Image (cartoon, rainbow, N blue to C red):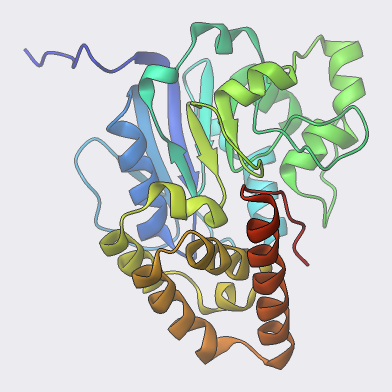
Length: 288
């Protein structure tokens, strides 16, 4: 008889999964890291290609997801068909469980918990989908014809903004408070508390070893190297004087970045260093 690791929370009501047709190997790493912290009922990778995976992770073949719209449609309209547990923890390649000891059973009291969108000025500030716990009840509801799929609107925004009031008023769907969201996960925050998980490539400097970063950099899609998220990550490594990884990132950046991206990088780097020098602490910074 296999004994459960008593040091990990037994999350037998949760299936952890990721849907990734671009970097399935990295999505697997996110699932594996999460499984090191928690015992889930099931672990599933949805992808369109054969991908070597460890025992205990199911690989389910799906139609290739070619765009953000394809991904959102799958999460909202197809995912529920594969989930048998009461809850599903959806992760992406750039987010995973950090510490199983930070799991709280009160998370089960909500139909959706995701990191806080602190830059949103309305009252809909909880709902990041990159690392999110959702009830199967909510997933089935969103798959119904009552909630039409909207192109060019992220699946998390459709749930947490577009249809939020209807879900609350008509179906009593419960969204986590900001306080609970901050205990569950973080994405863009100057400082983070001891959360259960996180989301965001730009946070890897906090959680990734140099050798692991090399593996990740060699597998991510080349389009990422010219994004603001990549510039943000590179700046974080430089400012925190992690120069070994900074060099690895910068070499990739110089290959793919155009003049506009290069100018933005140096502008924000100088601005961040100046902020550190003046304030002697981290100050939040908006990237563009």
